[in-house]
Image 1 (cartoon, one colour):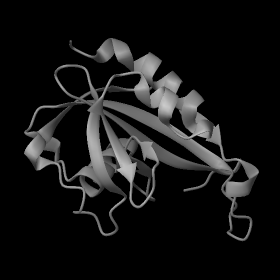
Image 2 (image 1 turned 90 degrees about the vertical axis):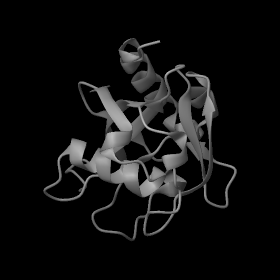
Image 3 (image 1 turned 60 degrees about the horizontal axis):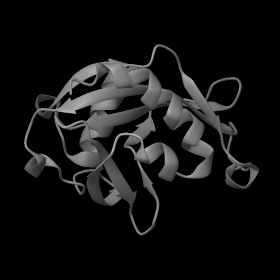
Image 4 (image 1 turned 90 degrees about the horizontal axis):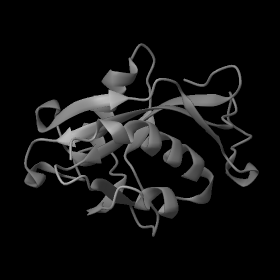
Length: 157
C-alpha cells in the first residue's frame, strides 16, 4: 500500500530478549544488517502485518513473543534517489512505519530464517540495544533512533 505521498505502509520489529539485547539480522547474501520489517498488505492491520512478517522473517509465532507496545505515529524515511524505482506505479519514495517492541518469551531454537516464501535473512545475533541505530544503512538511521528512543521505556530489564 503506497499512500498519495509515495510512502509504502510498513511495520518494523524490535525483538528483545530478557537481557535487553535486540535481534539483529543479516540480509541474504549481503553484509547488510537490519531489524525485521515488511509491508502491510491490503485489508491487513499493522499488528496483523507485524505477526505475519515476524513469522516469515524469523519463524517465530505469536506464542513466542509478547507485544510490549508500538510507536504512537508513523515514522518515515525517504529512499535515496538511486533506490527509487521510477518505472513502478505508483512510485515509492520511502517507507512509513509503525514500529513494535516485542519480548521473546519462547526458545531461541524456534528462530528459523528459512520459513518464509523467500528468506530475507541468512544469519542473526543478539546485539546491544543502540547498536542497530549506528550500523543500519545510512538512510534508515534516523527512523531507527526515533523508534528505539520511543520504545526503550517499554523494556523490562
